[in-house]
Amino acid sequence: MLDPRDLKARSMLALAERLGGRLEVAQQHIDAVVQEMPIDYFARHEQYEIHKALGHDRKAQESWTELWLLLAREPDSILEVAFDYAAAGRRGESRGILEEAIRRAQALPATGAAKRDFPMLHYTLGFLYDQDGDRDRARSEYSMGAKGDPAFVFPHRIEEIAVLRGALAANPQDGRAAYYLGNVLASKNRDEEALAAWRDAIRLDPGNTIARRNLGRALWVTGKKEEAASQYQQAIADAPEDYRLYVEIGNLLAEMGAQERRMKVLAASYIDTKRFADASTLLANNTFNSGEGEDAALSLYRKAHLGLARKYQLAAEHLKAAAEFVEATEYPRNFGVGRPAMQSQAREYVAAAREYDFGGRSDEARRWWQRAATEELNPPTQPEEPWSEHYFYKAVALEHMGRRAEARALYNRLARLNDEQQMLDAEPWPPVGAIRFVLAGAALKALGRPTEARVALERALKMDPESELARSQLAELNGGSRIATGPAGVR
Image (cartoon, rainbow, N blue to C red):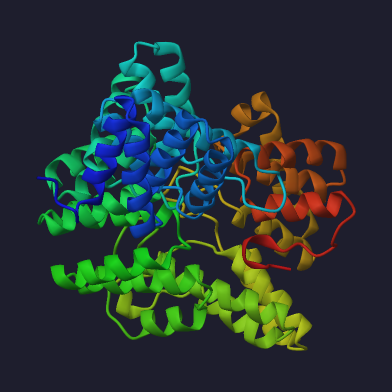
């Protein structure tokens, strides 16, 4: 006997009665369900179908309108109705409601209500087309699913596993489908399968930081903590503004007992959120072993102090800015890294000197101008050139100190980098990448050759859009600020 509390069973009974031609009885059953549960979407849709079959056009239209008012608030529930019909063997009704939902979403105006494409609607419709043998329409819908907005997409139904596996079978390169598949598998506690899906997701779509975060969390809870930390660090590199990543990796590293790494992550989070003073204090109050790469404590230390210098520059606190530029060139003892015998940091020296000049401390300014002009760019024992912006700023310092012949010689050396043959003839260890054209462009500008300088700087920015020296020099050429900012607001 039918359980009267089972609304889904009662709605299915009404469906069976409709299909069997017993429309009045079907209406009685479905009206009772809707009265008892007005937000039962499947019952609402079946009520529409029964009214339409009875020829009750006005009532059918009322049911249709009410249904879509409800579904507009809960787009994910469209899938619930589609899967209910599919489970009953009624793929036609299932396809129809998905097609209508997609049509309504695409008909939204560009302004006003937010226009969104819900990926799982397309994937599910594609799956139904696939089951019907309509491969072309299936591929089209799968493709639309891969391009849809992933925000607030949380597949969690068993049916969605089959849908997403169908999409991946049709297109094994669909990283978004792999990501969604990992999500639904995880919701069913199928951890190893979820891990495999998320690994595929980041392999196919390395920029999907949410998939990478999910993979990191899954690795963590399954005991693969070192690999989890690696995934979190990559996610942070791709999305440094996502504070949740810092919180989670901090907790993970604490659990691993990796205190030094945890402090570096915390310092990096302060820097990324422009809390430079907090980063500086944290780094000063902890001991670190020497480390390689951008996550090393010394690199974070420099970023923190250069960030503070920029902040003070903007506030016209010149002496404080100068002190921070100087601090950025230090090698604190608690980092376990000694100062190289010869390694100029002319860029920061010039920045400090200019700030001391602005602050009225000409003697101190002269000391830093002198140091920028005098220190070697690389040790004599190191034949390979450590090409960097310091080469240009040394020439700036030489010119400022009245050593114009030496300055011009260095500018000319850098300008030759713009010509492939001249560079190869002159440099045993020529620079590669954007720095070559950054240095050439800045030097050509200093030598009064603006046309060549502009071409070189524009080429540099195509290779490295983040080069602040190239941007600032090009801005001056284009009639912008006359103040060269450099990588940390160097003026």
